[in-house]
Image (cartoon, rainbow over all chains, first blue to last red; front, side):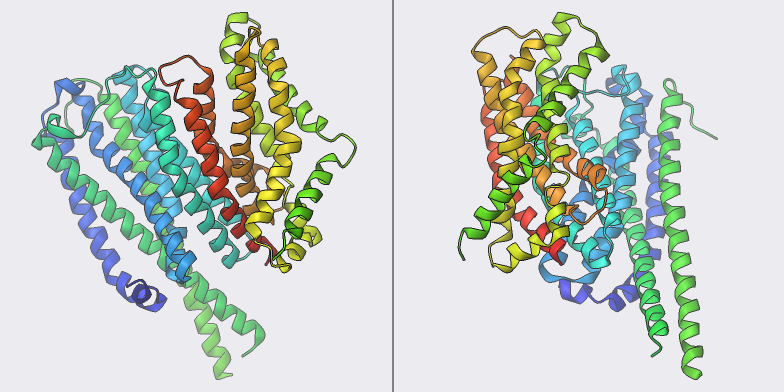
Length: 243
Length: 54
Length: 221
């Protein structure tokens, strides 16, 4: 299956209609989620009143922070084992976008935290801390790739780092959980279980799908840009050598 | 037009503004990058064709 | 495949550490210097210093491991000794592990041995806890050196890679720093924390050499 997608030409063909489709679907779903979240759903007094409406951007961002790092690690693994160029192009494209949504998760979390916990940054919240370290993992990955002088070296170094990072994420998560369980007293808003009424669940789910589609579409566009850039570089090299 | 919040309106709007700026910024930079790459590729390929024709 | 190249890498790394005459004094000086800057910043209240002392030493240990590791593989990649080792057919992972171990012995272990004296400066009481903490610093430092070694190997061909190495290593240091600090506290999870610290160090010893090996083969290309 990977080999089928591994052909850059086939990827360009596929993404030329898939990306616009994803953009359109994302726009519809995100718009519906926003409309529901900001206008329609009633405020939840158990979760601090109107402030819980931040959830409809915070939760999709948190989901994408996790999913995008996992996606980057999987793509790195595929590249490392099978050396499919498209997998490396995907990993490279996911990094800056994943960092963007991770930053969004941190920012909206901090804004949500101020009126709820009375502080912008809750050191005792395991999820905020874990997401912060994921953000650092993304930054390190981007910086390492940028520091390498050839495309091949950037791909190899990036893949090693992404895989080492992915192995460490569960350990980081566990250690942060242990650290925060010492003095956890904040009322953490939960999105699981029966506490979450269906009236919130649907807009939340639709927003998350919308953000995921937008993310995937942006990754595809960035991958297309990378493939075009590489082709242009090849053509330029041929012009220089004169054949 | 805009929804009316009973409490914490500033925080809610701040969250969604950050989202607009970050996501909008990401979209703009990705699209600009793709367009620049495409333009450059077309330019180079035209030069390659000219070169081949002599 | 003989252990000779691995031994020679180990010996060369030991020699490197003592080169320039200063030897282990250099990292020790950095470690102590970083630690004693803190009371100048946060004030000299004994109660505060006693609380933050162990944590300050963890941070100083992490910083000094990064500073010592910056050039560990870079010099080998530049002068060609890396190519020589890899040509002998010795596994890159073993060579990397040997070098990192040598650096921990010469730069990491002395810091742990110094830690009781620094903790006394941070108003700790004399007691068995000081020796226990020394063990934690030694073991946690080993994990720092191995994860730091991974980022140093990845950045081996990057000129002025110091900041890059720190950025990459920082999130990998988190579990060790947390478990280490918890092991020295008296909270509910302090009893289990030493075991977690040991487990995360063993995890580093098991995984990091392979990542370093892959990164070194990349640097040699």
